[in-house]
Image (cartoon, rainbow, N blue to C red; front, side, top):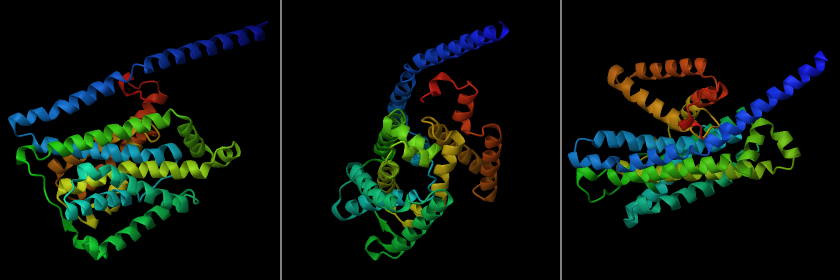
Length: 345
């Protein structure tokens, strides 16, 4: 009788947990309200430019939007699929040069050609992914670094695009007070589209296949998933948004040069942001990008732009991983302490 009672208790407890899960899913249906409200507030923020003096804040925000877009895009490959790329800024470079050269020679703004730059980056990403994604684990990571080095050598010696000196791009004909506003909205739109795409992928059959590949690629393939096609598609989608960000960033800086795009620090930032916020989650790259950029700005103010800044970033990452081993979002979700407005998964 005691055994039977124990079994009944287990069933009741399992049912209670199941009902709690259903309740949390019901709450999750209303999570869209916070992102929409946040997007609306951010869209209205440039109105403050009427009072002037917010140029630096606008720069910091559009810079954050850019990294939110690129980190969320990287997360599609590195987070959902489990393939860590340290050469993703190659597509950042391709997007910047594709639209930058069109602007330099034909005068068409990158704000118009950014989607084409994204498609160019995605096409290159598809080809590179088809070749390199045959490799797994550390071998793929090394191949991505090799890709970055090859691209740096190519662009440094390609005289048509200015070589290592790069080329200067024309500016928009706007007053200095409003110069940043078009790029602010461009990066906001790119970031919003990237996060929305990441969310849709996470909750789709395609996303389920990517997560299966991340857990066990051999079993995923034996279950009927075309793993190579899934991986290459994730690589191309990821490259698309990074390419768009690179296109707008080049015009915003008014010049394009290999050492802007093709430095390992850019790729490392994408990885660190996702790890800090929570790799494989929708909100994780956003939280990671905001925190890392905020900390870098504060450390530059108080420690200066020196090795102490790099040391401080390393210490913060170490402490964060000690207390949040699966990232802030991932760890809080596992402990059921994640705020509802951040529960986008």
